[in-house]
Image: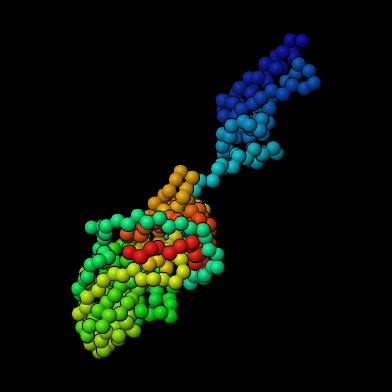
Length: 337
């Protein structure tokens, strides 16, 4: 190789070094068809990196990309999609807030959604594990409570999240004996000052009412005393009546395999716990003031359901699908307390 050719290449190398030092650029050599000559190529570092990534194997690790980089003719391979993780979505969080009980004066509730009945009936088994009343329960079988009764314009809906109904023999339980919604769906025999007794179903909560106080529907109150009375002394006790058909289940609006809420209806005894069968076994759900049981991460949603009443009776049902706002019949009814 002639001295002039070597000097020219040295000069080119010095120019490249100067450019790198001043501009922060990078370069690489491209050899053509076995020739000894090399062409000095200058480029922006981000473009050079993008070009190198484009030439990397498909299984090369993803190092990320600069959002301000100039697009390359050969785009950087996209990272492989990650496995979806079960989380509480914003929609589900909004649903929880939406269903939270309101603090308006008087009996309050949020039973505004309408569920439809399903003819589907699951297979179910009932096991009896009768136990003594829990000393922590605010309302217990076999005890009589004294208090007062007032009345309100009931619709059958309320804080227990049931649908409005034509049967208005219903009532709202005082804040303490509402017991975090455990008395939702309970049946209570109320005896008035004249000695006659009526039966009502608890569908709502009376936030300002003291222990012993039951806020009856206007229709129920009228069977015990003249409405003009407004307030009467009563005694009452919880009962376990015969009901038509098996227990029913309703998945909450917005329920999916990633998050769900489930409610039990048409149960003759108050429900203490609800469990769902997940891949790792039975999971006890969190009870809400508005009478739904939640699986925040979706574990067990759409699988087997096991309920336990306040007397220890258990009922297990399978085939309860995630069909929000649809009443699905279980296989059995709970035994009498």
